[in-house]
Image (cartoon, rainbow, N blue to C red):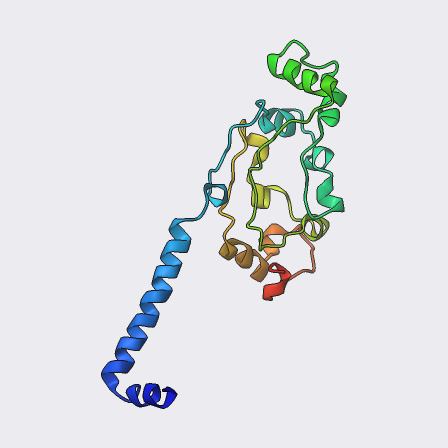
Length: 193
């Protein structure tokens, strides 16, 4: 049977048909993958949150550093979302008459958690670690956009592999002046484990 297949491939028409079929299959896979990406991977994704939170106020006007609330970025793969306890560190005395802060306080008193919806999430087959990026001096705004200007946080850039690879191939624009890093890992298992 295999010999018959190789014999058929000698015919130029069969070779052209096989090549065209292979190209069509690849195009269909790329087309379906591109146009069926989940909304959570798309630029501009901004799910409704349980209470309104303004990064423009907190990170912008009040100039609270990103790592104050997202301290996990230095210590673990995930930057994390601050706990209700952390928010109440300030809001026990600040803006206590606000309905949103009253809702936050009620959750805190009940010992519950707020069900924040992730804005930036990668597919499960992608491994991302905030630590090497933070330690290299990559500003949060490089990937997350100008969060200090966002009243409602939204995804600034598409989380497609091409965006990550472009930065890994030339990270200098994302790094602080004087950094000696000229490239970041591009091998598949750096991000796919």
